[in-house]
Image (cartoon, rainbow, N blue to C red; front, side):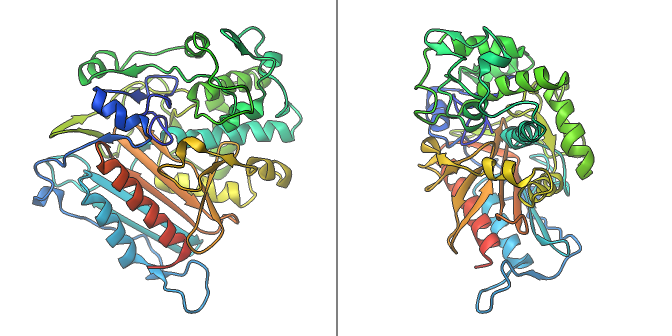
Length: 425
């Protein structure tokens, strides 16, 4: 995500394209607290056009999260209730996928693909996955580490001499590990929109990686490298520049070559220079108080902080493969899971920690799950996968709130993920 918890909606979480929306002051305040985006359900929310629609993939009627006796089984009916509860907060559309094994999969959807219509949310439709992209990018970097083409302790200055400098910024003190873990201290000055009007005027504007990094260099660091935690999209822009230096190919080409093709992720694509989302997709909406609804599906967004478009099935397959040890050697996977406190996310996610491109949260049944969120204009993705990669959840929503319902949305999704992974009701 960029600017809400993991995404582009809060002033500090932008991408290399305009991913963060600050909108009016009241909206910016919500976004800045990691809560992003929108308000008031559409007028037709309670009408037939917004009626809940569900679909089930070929799968058992219920799923046991851990196989233990005496624990309730999380099944299709519970998933549909949880998805409906999220939609009833005022969302236009939502879909969720739960996987426990190759033969244990559930899928549910609720709401519509386009406000004012009866068109259901498309099964496994495309969506902007925003900062979920960071997990893909971090995986590429750790593969390069395993191949000894770079080191996590390499400095930015080594790979990008003279790029991080000025106003107290020093690339010789910032390592690749710092960038991946958001502990670099680099101020995240990512272009934002100050109003809906500005969104329409500038939504197709693009920036080079160098231009984005230069914006951050106009500011003093937020803290000394390794001495704090601060979500930085521009840190991942720097990572993409290092990947290109090390491989001779753009970050998205390496993602495709190293991850998407081997795993058969045929519907995971770079947004490139396109302003739209491939079909089929649900349209993305920003809901502003008191009752404004803005279709924000089309805009330009393609950097390494969140420029991928994908589906719940592909995202699910990626995280299961990653945590299941199919993409990284044990040493690099262990490094990815070495976490620090994600202090900026603890208000919304108590116990949140962040590793290298993935984070962790406590489970009510014990242990933690691994995840990364993604927030883009109109789209919100939340994920969860167990440490062995055996159980996973992906929730995709086509609505962002700009009032207190964003927090309720976050809690409802978190509860779904916890229940599905723990197998409790």
